[in-house]
Picture 1 (spheres, rainbow, N blue to C red):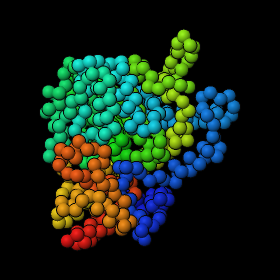
Picture 2 (picture 1 turned 90 degrees about the vertical axis):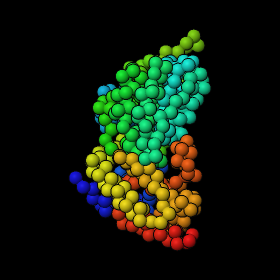
Picture 3 (picture 1 turned 30 degrees about the horizontal axis):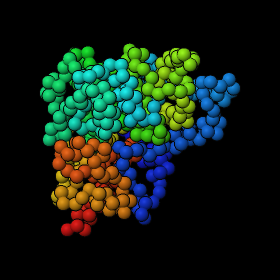
Picture 4 (picture 1 turned 45 degrees about the horizontal axis):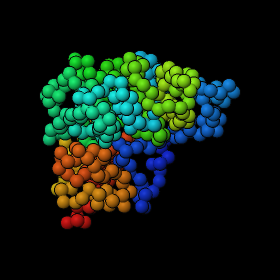
Length: 406
């Protein structure tokens, strides 16, 4: 199946606006995607006709909202091919999901002298929570190195894994380089030593089908707003065997069965990890977004974006003083580059004057930028609605910037 990009673009209201006198060209999808009208309509429908707190109400609206919310959980379970709907935990996003696992898992399973393994290309959200866990439990953080192609050096992973390793946490796709990491191999290596693995899927979920059963990962997380859904909600998948053993992350309403001053009995999964009033409307918006992606067919999405990436790389190579960051064998969603003699921020600022939205800086991956020895990059990241004509306009704009600075 081939995407009908011209047709689907009509369903994204944000695309139909002018920025600095130019029609918007949006290449900042790795930061957040634009929202289709179908998602916006679902949010409006909830707040107009279903708005109610869930689970605890005996009235009609509460029952209706509860049913919709739990149906969304089942939709996400099927989308990820998880074994049980109670393995799906709603969070505020990927960041909170990782913090939940880092804090809760470490209390139960990590002790003084233990080790946690991450990679050199991680987003800060998959570094800092583990640093905090290590500091709290007197454990050590170890790092899988990255080579000049922007790929993980898996030969070093065997030496990093040992009897002290309690968790491996890696990105499925690098948000800074677009590298698709060989997570299947990483998971297999870790499981040979009975070490659980968390996969940060924030940059993978918009671009490819995720099958947690096939991956056999222990935890997988992603954010709604990167898969064309609302901000403020995300998903943590966790194997039942781990979630049952982990203590709650937060205390409050919903996560309890019985509260007495003498002690509290916690609720069953998934509610044990969902304290407080949930973000019902945005969960329903996320469900609509995932249904939208499924209807487009993720294979067609991946093929369209692959072609955009290849076209962008070939065009960028024709420009003077351009440095492309990384050349991984598998790439998804992202191309990062910079002019060798122009600061990335200056490039991004001028592109904005031309109506082109890109991201500049370290992309919350400062350790990786230090390894690459660059101040940051210009990152173009792709969504289902991006076109080859937009890339041509980007390249023409970069030529103008090059001439301006010359």
